[in-house]
Amino acid sequence: RTEMMAKEEFASYVDSRLAEKHIEAQFLQTECGGLESELGTVNEVAEEYKIRTETLEKRMNELSSTVFNLIQQQDSLVSTYKSQDEYINKAQAMRVKKVKELVNLEEKMVDNHEDFGSMLMSNSKAKTSMSEALEKQRSLMDAVSGVV
Image (cartoon, rainbow, N blue to C red; front, side, top):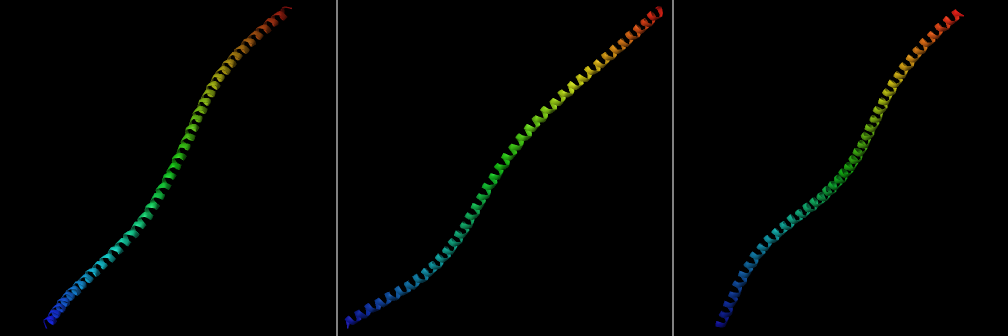
């Protein structure tokens, strides 16, 4: 009988320990279920962040490409501006040169005009002198003819 009692006590002890372990297992299952739920939520958030990161990375790549294209266009515009600036400077220098040539030609024309005017005046005086000399010679010839 003592042996039976001892076995019953041991069985009761084992049953109580088993019940404790069953309760502990249920608690752990509940806690594990909560952790699984939290892990699922963390995985969802991580996936959202992954998608957002990929989207941002794509946008950054597009922005980088756009900025690179803008820099190339700006370089092209600067090059074009420099070429036009050089052309304008050369054209302006050429215009200044041509204006100086025109001023020199005009000065020569004025000098030639003055020389021509002086020559005409001199020629006119010479004609007048020649006319007067011819008039005197006629008068002298008329006087000589009248004497003969």
